[in-house]
Length: 334
Ligand SMILES: [Fe+2]
Image (cartoon, rainbow, N blue to C red; front, side, top):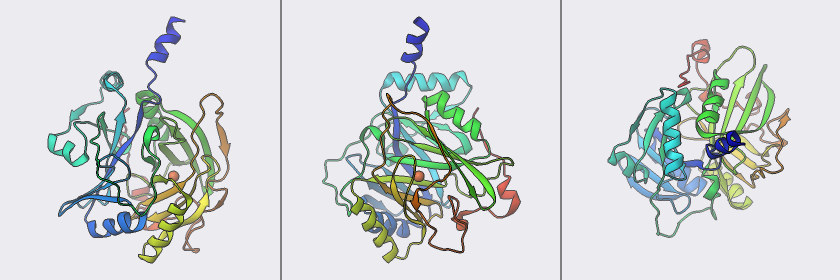
């Protein structure tokens, strides 16, 4: 019984959530149009080298900083309390995974009081923080609101050549739980997607891998990130606005079988996809059972360009070039 108790005390499931996302891009004007006029977020601040957006009371949820990567530069993870923070750092230390304190200038840019940076799987910097700065300025958004709170701001989907290691990292460091699996044939290859939750949100991280020979055709560190709006009209409105602004859709509106989310995927100015959805289910831990699905969508999500491959990896504009990119080596901290 003692063992069980101590295991439970060390389980930080529910104490970790998506806090913010940092994107590096040279296309600040396009990102402003995409996120403010298209998705409908609140533009919190705008400088020559940085845009910052809010979707709730947090001063910063999405930060676009000037730079040539056209990729995600960091995922900010909010930890509930000092005990959680200490436990995560202990686990990293035990595995000889190094971490460093962010500078006060970097913390300021991210709207947090301080953070610790660790290089996560696939060389995605993960930034751990506790306290976000809160803004009292009323939100000026085209959307009615976004689902955050205990769920965090959304999720990321990552293609990986080392999916078992990536999953193990999220489980061993953050007590992530497997929600379910989807397998679907995409352009001749079988794609297996594992959905991991850190809290009540059905998934904060989805890991996609080709079965058999592991290929990673995606240029960027994430395949897409997702936000969940409060109302269906927020999703349909953003879809229309993004189209009117000239942004391409990777997938039109459809529904996923596992989290039941109704969503679309637009191609962001940096090339990776951005999913905006509504009505994503929250997991009831008492009754949840893992399922296996054989399609990523129940209906819809059809590619805007019908000549493109159907399925999750439709956005060939973000695909790597040739075999070298598909076989590129992948960093794992474990
Ligand atoms: Fe998604």
